Length: 116
Length: 112
Image 1 (cartoon, chains in turn red, cyan):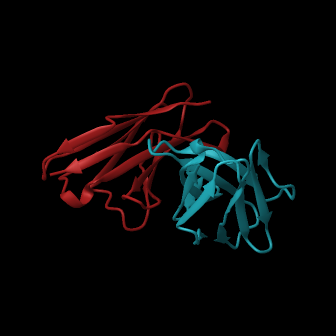
Image 2 (image 1 turned 45 degrees about the vertical axis):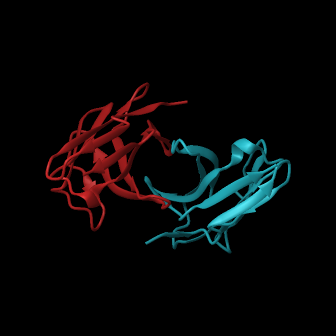
Image 3 (image 1 turned 135 degrees about the vertical axis):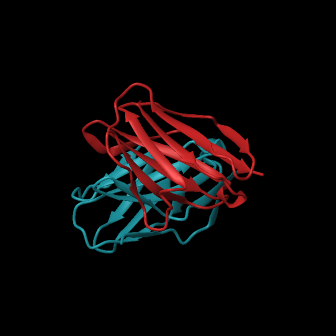
């Protein structure tokens, strides 16, 4: 099946700094990617839809200036958490649908962010 | 907005037995997809089974099958011959167009 990778798998940063998370589709091209956030023992909440070559679409309540998304190529989307605070600590997951079949989404392994 | 409800926060099943996880959803759309995802301790999301709303036949994948009741907006997952490796969080999800909406999840424990 299709493979989606994320890097890093775990990151610790200090409050006030920024951290970038990469999401890559390894063996297929993805014009759209999705970013989710998952708190401990909770479900996945969609944060934004990343669109290659255009602006991301953010879900209601998600601060676009805080969670910067860049979809620079057909295989790479990045999520930058700017001026991170401890409440941004969470598990971030990306997913990408394979071309022509948007109902088949493949998920990355996730990134655990801890802000101290 | 679409909502997905999983009313069972935790379930337990003995190895080799059968368990059913419940899911209901709310939508006004007629064309959509439903999914069950498994999230083991590694937290990697794994697709278990998919159901297209326009199909009346319930989907099956080896030991996994669904009971899709479109009028009742119900989509339950049955796991037969449960194995220790089935222990995980299970999320029901709804998709219309491209966005997935997840339920709150059911933690499945498999005992010997």
